[in-house]
Structures are given as C-alpha cells and as structure tokens.
Amino acid sequence: MASLRLERAYLPDVRRMIESGNVIAIVPIGSTEQHGPHLPFGTDAIIAESVSLEVADRLKDKLNILVVPTIRIGCSAEHMDFPGTLSLRLETMISLIKDVCASLSAHGIKKIVLLNAHGGNTSLLKGIIHQLRREIDALVVVVDTWSISSDVLAEIRESPTGGAVHAGEAETSLMLALDESLVKWAEARSELPRMDSENKYFRVEKPRYVSFSWCTADISRSGVIGDPTKANEEKGRRIRDFVTNAICEMLEELSRINLAGES
Ligand SMILES: [Zn+2]
Image (cartoon, rainbow, N blue to C red):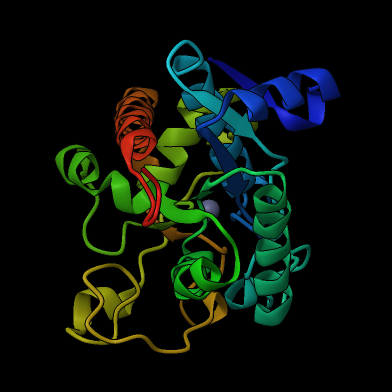
C-alpha cells in the first residue's frame, strides 16, 4: 500500500501501484477566484489540495491512493465582476473532468474521487458522474469539503445566516489552520448578504430552496459574502480534522465497494 502524488511520482512507482490493484485516484478541484481583501485567489485550490494530500498521507499504509494534479480553475462565473477571477465555461469544465477521469480509467484505475472545495463546481460535478459511469469503466465519487463538514460547521458557527458563504467565517478559519501566512487578517471585514436575513427563498446560504442566478457583485462590494471576523485557527483545525477524518472514513469504505460485475 502507498500514496503517490502523481506530479512528483516516477513511472516505476505508478506502474507498481496500478499493478497491485484497488487504486483510488483523488482529483483535487478548486478555483481561481477573488476571495476579498484577506484571502488569496487560490483559496479553494489550496484547500482541496491540502486536504487531498493530508488524506493520502494518513491512508498510505492502508490503501493505494494516487493524488493527481489539482484542477486550479473552476466554474466561477458568479465572481467575474471582480478582476483576476478565471472561469471555465461549463462545457470546458465537463470536458476537462471527463478527460482526466477517462485517462485514469484507461490505465485501469476503477475508483476516482473528485474532491471539490468550490461550491460553484458542485452541481456540475454531481451532474456528470452518472453519465461518466456509462462512458468509462470506473466508479466516480464527488465529495465536497463544505457539504461533508456541515455538522461541525453548525457546531462552531458564531456568525448569523449568510456569515459563511464565501471568504467568511468557515473558509477563513480553515485557511488560518492550513496556512496562516496567506490570511491578511488586518484586512478581514464582515459583509453579510441582506437577502439572507430578509428572504426565505432568495438566499445565498443553505438551506437553499431555490437556485437563482445571483452574482457576487449583486450582494457584496468587497467580494466577501460572510463574516471572516468570527474566524479563528481553532475553528479551522476542527473543520480540517473533521473533513480529513470523514474523507478517510469514506475512502476506506470506497475501497471495499465492488462495482457491478466484479467478484
Ligand atoms: Zn472559496
């Protein structure tokens, strides 16, 4: 059993891992989008990659884990009013994910985990996995760092509704725990979306009963949607530990799952 980071791995090691079987590939997926004045553009990609590497390290004696290069640009149309944001069209993102999964499958990898840390990618990823199952010989899983951590987020939460949407309490806490040097704490300001306290249906934070085409510029001047001033490193450590534990547990379960037709 081993874990390998593909971009730093060598052919004989990858070959040996694939030949030994039951490999789970993790594809970290983030974005390059504005995160206000206090978090960097690469926040989501940094989170997805850190969690993936941590999980792979923890499981290296139990499972065969191959962490593939992080997809650092995602679907970020909602942030395109802010300079620096890069966004893929849906069809580009679908093609990118499908081609990465098809490449892994072509080498005999039958379990692929799309580990996503950007909410704007989630519905697209969930939307393509059933079609992918028909196209490639692999089971594809979507895990979203923010969905899987909803229980711990509810426990640590101090900000009101709308306080943890984007660059807010949760994301800033997690970044403080992952790499404090990337958080410009002195610049962190709260900007709560008014629609979340006023509306039942037209809100940007969960629970979302309807989806609608909001843009960040509709609700935020700073680019922040939430309250980063309620963030701290201890909360971030709790989120990080909860997410990595849950994903490790999920991967161990995945390793025992057999696809239809497998003995
Ligand atoms: Zn983010």
